[in-house]
Amino acid sequence: MDWLQVILLSVVQGLTEFLPISSSAHLILVPVLTDWDDQGLAFDVALHIGSLSAVVLYFRHELSRMTASWVGSLRGGGMDEDARLGWWVLLATLPVCLIGFAFRDIIEVGMRSPVIIGLSLIGFGLVLGYADWRRRRGGRSEYQLGLRDVLLIGAAQALALIPGTSRSGITITAALLLGMSREGAARFSFLLSIPVIALAGGLEIVGLVREAQAVDWPAVTVGAILSGGSAYLCIHYFLAFIRRVGMQPFVAYRLLLGGWLLWLFL
Image (cartoon, rainbow, N blue to C red; front, side):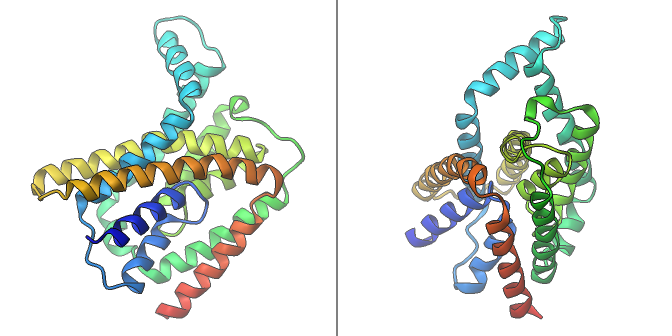
């Protein structure tokens, strides 16, 4: 890998992992627009580690409280809002895990079409636009979710297995439709990313060990750092941006990118 490839892929992964614009759509464009070889499994693992480190670091205070309260609830210490949020994150992760494991081969082989990605960008982008447009003033935070809300958001997250949907995009959409605030919807979506990214990275590590590939350690190290740094900045500025502006700029971007993919591949 040359350094331009390392830098571009790392920053693209770090930004698109958390923006509601689909990382799969952007990563599929890289081989289309360049003649680069596949970056390899070790580099993919490094990018996931970087993204995971960023969201854990950003929400470190919330995660510390959630973990302590969640463990306390297991020991009979009662259920406060932090313990409840910890349980909600775990519960909302189950659908995507079960469906992902059951249909992994179909998703990875049969649904990676640029046309499917383009249609998903447009279709789910329009739903995101509608959800943001009909959002009421105020709205609930991530600490005010109920069981029904969590089950519906978890089911929506499973739709992100369709390439082009965007995991953050579909979970934010569902949360907005359920009456959450923009910031609350985004924060819950980011918390949900932690177990999902950890599980995806774990599967990649298993594959890496089995394949016993040679590792380009300088590229892997720089990739993890750049992915983590860009992801951290993305989370910070995204939360500030949507508080003032909303989701419509991302909707417009999804429509343009989806249309371009359909124009390229149809």
